[in-house]
Length: 483
Image (tube, rainbow, N blue to C red; front, side, top):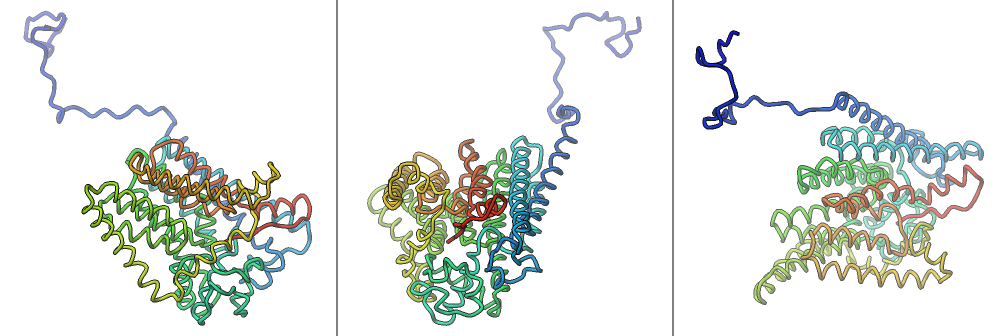
């Protein structure tokens, strides 16, 4: 037998010498071994990703082309949006448009669920998720506002502020004109329930848009799109590497975000980026910046108070001794004043919005828990609403007092979720800030809530979907509204 190269000449082959084991190669010199990938797994993931992209694009297109055909008589005074807005006259045509709208929502949600599943399994990269979201958002940004006409109220309030009217005391009908006409009739007499920052952004949009309704809406949509993009960047930096792709998918590709924040340009887009920015600043050990951003979120809409309260209580709890607490109070107080003093100088009656906080409650949403409880128990809805507000305050108070027992994002996320869910009305965009914050957590429960809010929350939004369904099965009164 030839034994050349197997050992010294003449040495017989046998079992290894355990007393003198062969030296192991240095790790730097080891030959890398490629991970074992099941056959076909890569191609399967690519096919699923393509399927998710196609589903989302088709769904978005269906929603865009059908939304404007369900706009009832108010469509006659809305911008045409490249001819996409104009109510169908015959019941059959309107029923077809309603069916297309529901189908589009189902397809977009299906694509979103498939994308999240791929991201959780590690079968797609973060870049692939972002590119998918960009594909879906293209038809959405060129079409009319989806699910809500609130953005027309925003620009009308901005025009009122620019003309010297106080949106906290009078509604758009007091002004009249082209900015008044596209506003949902339910809200033409309503006072603005938004903070001074929201009104200031609306006024800037009107001025930059040269007092054109369509240009002003487009500018607010650009602000919303930029807010969502910055939110995606922030949540990607806040989360661990193992969950980053899933988190980005839950935020960037969420139908709730694409439809209600980007397309409809709701104020919640700005609230979300400010709240997430406040959490990111706290994570980066910049507490004063975090408080300033949370104060700005409160200056846009009331739920921002949850983030501001959580940061304030956390800073006081971490301070050792009364002198340290005084310094913390002074620092945080100056950060709040740095935001609110300029707003008070730029917006007349900057606290007037607190008197108009009941405006959203003037509507009725069949999907709100308080409405369901009132319907089932036969208890007057006004009593149920009052009890729900008390429960909401207790939940948020409990979360704030125990803020050090959990991640700060958990306190803020669950607090925002409680405020949205237990409010007098529930519109889908109310869930967006909570869904974005909860998406940054590692827990499966928070991720599931964020996932369900992204599709189920949007579907239940839907006074508009309710209207579309009624068009398919028969005529009926719509309860669609928003604030």
